[in-house]
Length: 116
Image 1: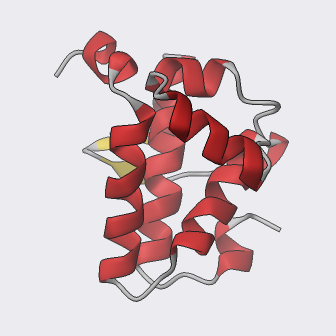
Image 2: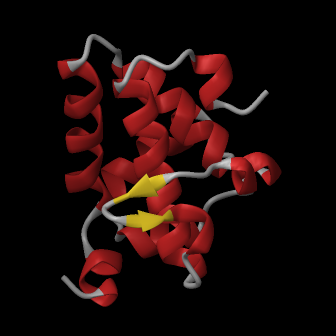
Image 3: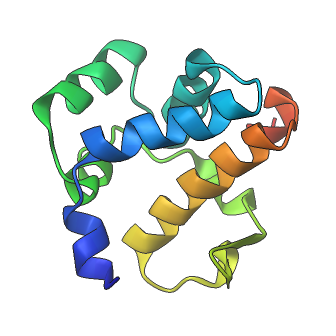
């Protein structure tokens, strides 16, 4: 799948997959929301509004209030790529989100996931 196709995917279709991935491992929707809000700067209400607007993944990140400055501390491999080495800024943000949800699903504490 090309980056452009990923960028044009509806965030409203990706979000339930992120929640399902975490819930299969005993985590909650509110924990997924917490990591999304930490990364993007959205409040819970504005996150829900973005989901309801059926915007693209690209627009979701472009309209994000502020990417957390600690996001650069997110490291590791997702989909065979080291997230800290991804050159495309938008794809890196998407992979950061994937990595955070992966860590949640693997049972990592929320404090460690949020790089506090």
